[in-house]
Image 1 (cartoon, helix red, strand yellow):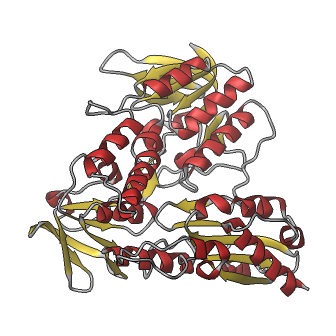
Image 2 (tube, one colour):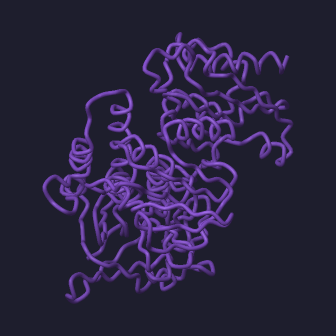
Image 3 (tube, helix red, strand yellow):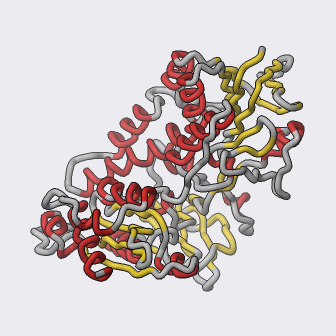
Length: 462
């Protein structure tokens, strides 16, 4: 059969793609070998945030056993009473939009031509005016001596578990590692976190890393910084991890969460459509996410930032471009959030990055704990009595002195992932700092803390 667009991969980018195609009256078929809805809906964002919410209730003193948390997570990922999630809801949305779904393994066999194999049956051939590749990414598993023999969990196992281990070691201090470490420790699991760099959350502001590190350590997470796993063997509680500083850490289970990398597009046959790939099979898309004549990429497969909101955005841009529109991806103001307690948020450039670009930049910071909003939120300390201080955190802005606009914004505090999107729009539209400073922000909110930072920046600009 022939379609306007063939979408290979039904995750966040693929779902956005078929929805956009529908809005433009284009015929679309989605090829998916696993779950329509992808990683986020079943194994990543949604289950992890559901478990974080349950863990917070427990940290606040509620009677919230793991069995409840597990049951609610299973409800969230449509896995109630079964071993593997159901994607029926996502499939209904796809088919209701007018798109077709073909299940199986896709392989591009020529320009605009895809073969799909399913359960050993004869391949089904699809033809399309444009191809969109959105097959996501896969966990990066570092070559650690003994790791395969000892066994390990990936992030999928980390969010899907139904029974808690007595202890756990998490390799990787990025968002996945720190979020799941907090879930585990709040449910009574002895938890260690190993991070090869000198701080966790290295893509966040250093102040954010410091705030979250302090929170996790206070709750009992054993954080090892600046060390790498050099070997793994069975023994002790289950697995013993040898570290580069000569020490060891052990746990009944081991989670490897050191990052993900785009899937090798050579395995999909993308080159058969006339596309040139990098030496590891990676895409090199242009601003319209085009990698060849009639071939586009979106989401993790595009090789950029690995966030669901980026995948959704890129899926929409790619389809508009595929249908002949002048669509270009603007990825200069992508928000990033981590949903630990406290949350972190970032957008734009660190002051060091701005200076490297030749921007005359300066940084303005407010202590969240001594802000009006910070004072109203009691820190979680488990002290047995009231904690008579504000909730720790910060709000930091990076300002371009020459253009008098915001180029970066960062925060760590309760609610940080929600209240700083004003900065995303400000950076995208180059809104003057004077306008942001003159904007009324409700009292007492985290947004008002940001407004006060803008007022301080305006004073420095003169």
